[in-house]
Image (cartoon, rainbow, N blue to C red; front, side):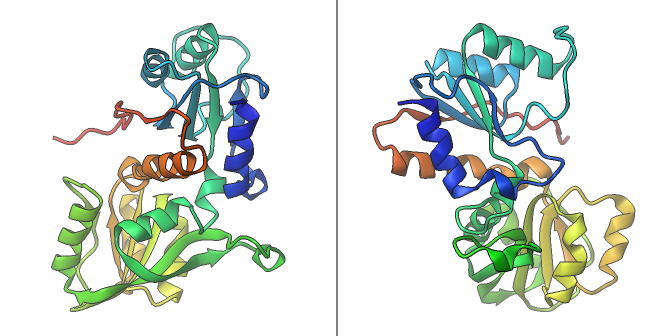
Amino acid sequence: MKLTDITAFLEQIAPLRFQENYDNSGLLLGDPGMDISGALICLDATEEVINEAKDLNCNLVIAHHPILFSGIKRFKHDNYVDRALITAIKNDIAIYAIHTNLDNVLRHGVNEKIAQRLQLSNVEVLSPHASAHLETSYQIGAGAIGTLENSMTGKEFLAYVKDRMNLNVLRHTRILHDQIKRVSVCGGSGSFLLPAAINASADVFVTADFKYHQFFDANDRLMIVDIGHYESEYFTIELLYELISKKFPKFAAHYTKVITNPVFYY
């Protein structure tokens, strides 16, 4: 199979035009015409992940986060980006990133996957993209919102989130509602969507990367549940694996076994 066969499929799911201006999704390293023996799917294309791909005879790494965000003037092997890229080049391993373009599509996107983990129904885009009305084939925008089948108390919902998202710990604002029913979500850094979640009458907003003072911005309108950046996007690996395996059933796709989360809890 050619690399371009896989990238074309991924870009059908999440077109590159949907990525944010600051982003760097797409093929970061590799020849589009190269033959691909297998793909390793991860959140971060670190050196350890590249070596894992080599051991699995995979010459493609598909990552959610781009390892390259800005220009590189020299390779010095003194930081994780340089080391990952040098290792990939030495071993002829291609790197592809599918980041905010996958965040910004609802169907088969990061936020739909979170909604599925939380078993939400009637799922919609939380904050539609300005050009959403021009798209006929895609629902595009940031975040998602849906409803639980059965209402829960605040404490029940927090326990439910920990179970469904495989968490050991989470952070949250005070519990406001006796019954949680309407749930908004955003994978990764979602604090910018807090006003949209409030305006959508969500009872709770599940996301990551809230700073201390930003928790005050909930203003007792909803409960913020911060589950961690890595934790909020972890099931993106499963999402991409399922999509690729269904499209190319005879292709060797693998989950990474490397935990690339740089945050540890004690």
